[in-house]
Amino acid sequence: MDGLIKAFSDVVLGGGGGRDGEDESRDERSRSSWAQVVSGDQDNEDRPPSHSQWTKQVHMDNWQGYKRAPSEQEYADEVGTGTSVEPSEEELADLSQACNRLWQLDLNRLEPGKDYQIDCGEGKKVYQKEDRAEGSLFYSLSEDIFRKPTFSRFCALLDNYNPNSGCKEVVTAEEKQEQSAFIEEISRTAPIKYLHRYLSLKGIVSENYQDFKRVLTKLWFDLYGRGGTSGSSSAFEHVFVGEIKQRGEEEVTGFHNWLQFYLEEAKGRVDYQGYILPRRRGETPDSETQLLTIQFEWNGVLKAVSSTLVGVSPEFELALYTLCFYVGGEDNYVQLGPYSVNIKCYRFGDKIGSVFPIAEC
Image 1 (cartoon, rainbow, N blue to C red):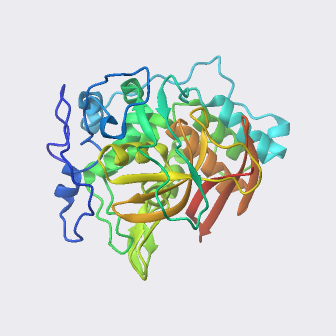
Image 2 (image 1 turned 90 degrees about the vertical axis):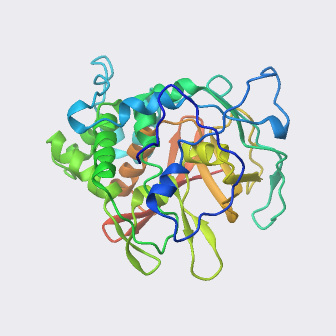
């Protein structure tokens, strides 16, 4: 990752949204990773820009403080004592109520129209392959969000993986450090503290918080085999980063995180192609919607249908999916604020095979 960050400067990516070669080195993948985000003028902010003007700007120095040696790491303060993270009896008895409590505890969730702007374009059926979006899904995102410690530490992890599902991953000492730093950071937030109290009261995890952090690290970052290759995948890579299945017809699997989508779209690697029409007569998505079902291409490979919670914090998503994995089943019908959601959870032995939200329209 040497040279990944240039403090106090933007990194400009020029063209090229094609797939990386399978023989591309890890260093080369790092140099063309999330940090290389298109910079552009912020003209005409009062109206959505034309497709050719849709550019995204992120100041790279915001991540500089998160690439230090472990002994030099600095972390955010613990969540304030005024925030209760104790589950109620009703929440302990009802997964939906517990998930809704997590939604309420997501203090870092972004506000649509203020922190970011999206244009959903036109709707389509899953089987329709034509592009129904004139431009990008995202056309603005406040750079302030990358000053949020959990967001920055999350982004630091996104370039650690080879998207080829048949390629064995190599985890460096620096990448293990980034994993530990991310878990430490989110463990200071209300959603993760609530998750720990909930699972410990259920007798699922130890009351010792350090032991709990190790459980989270193992659950999300331990490697396992997928696509016939051992050590080629992990829960974090599949759910948040995404993978490209090589056997048979190529297809994108996983890739359910909005931050990864934003950064890959900014680099020209994602081509947004429209939202998927609700199965029943539900509301069509608009710029305020925070649960989207969409279609896109990633590195030229189609993801026919993908669902994502837009604007939520990394700690909320990880807490939500972990809770459903340990307490729920394959289908988990829950309420998240205004959204009725099925958190679909597929197990891979004692690991997370995949987990993602499905809108219950």
